[in-house]
Length: 89
Image (cartoon, rainbow, N blue to C red; front, side, top):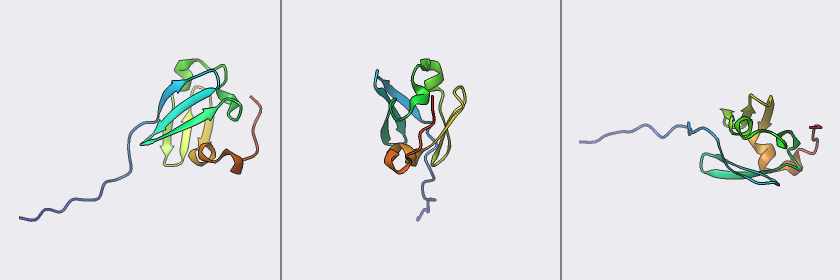
């Protein structure tokens, strides 16, 4: 008896903030953990933990923090030097 299975789809796991320090925070997206330093991502400095932890993966490369009204590309976290413009906090 032969069975065929469909290939696995995209991960549906929600992103998760795994650690917060005075310098930034770590975000787990699927099996990748990324660090967001407050110096490069100032919108998160001074945020409450509840607001910081409320993050949504809108698409494979789009994160949204609704309580902070912050949208980020995952690519901009991986390679911030490729995205030199930084908004004021």
